[in-house]
Image (cartoon, rainbow, N blue to C red):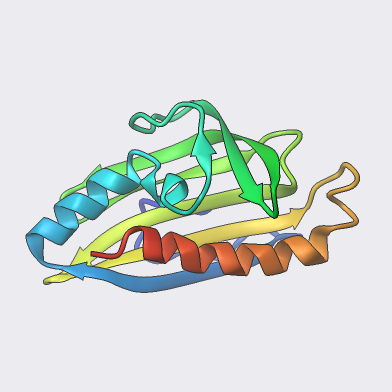
Length: 158
């Protein structure tokens, strides 16, 4: 759904909030190698304050428990890695949420370079989770999502 292997993201599925943000995280070959390695090992999440129960290299089909730490609480977010891309100028992955996750949808973290510029692009498709209390808290979760996206970018800065 979030198509991390594609440079251009085609129109998305109905019923999901669509978001795509991109920021420069470094310059040059060393920045590329570091950012590509880090994104494929969950650092975009772990350096943003999350814990990951399987922090090794991502692989399609991996089912992982990501834990968000927020205001002294720990919220477990079960996900499944949907797609991995590891190419000379593009690296990243997407995961889909599993039952029990506070939202329903998919998120992708893509590091790509053009010339010397190294960028992180975050794509997400989000809608309210079917279960309470998350369904009722969905508007608050959208605000939290926008804050966390900024943390993702900082996590991969050179």
